[in-house]
Length: 179
Image (tube, rainbow, N blue to C red):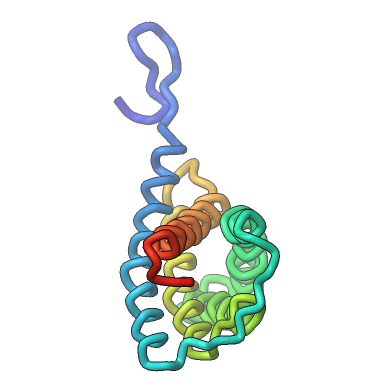
């Protein structure tokens, strides 16, 4: 049965939008985790991880900001808005996707430099290039899937990734690997 078809009872069948959003978002969050986390661990093991962390607001505030606020704000500022603006300015030129990617990933990298989590330039570059690329391609993939919001799918992807990282850090803290 196709989307929009009716069942024998005459009830319209809707495609499972939530399941498709989670499938797309989960795929790119997993790709992000499989690349970014090992890279961050290597960067930190090499001594280039940064050490200026000053976050003092508490775990609950970090979870809310990292899993709810940041994904929504950053999806708007670093993905949706730049993609829309670049497409309006450049139109359907062959260079448009690359320029849109640069305009998304550059500021996303800069945003993740320093701050209260103490990221070094190298970890910010890793976050920006790997995470920013995953979120950019999540946006583009969701755009191609009829009925899926690229904005909310990308925000969900970001929230899933940040939640997984916070969960992993929580387990590492409980097990005594980080203090």
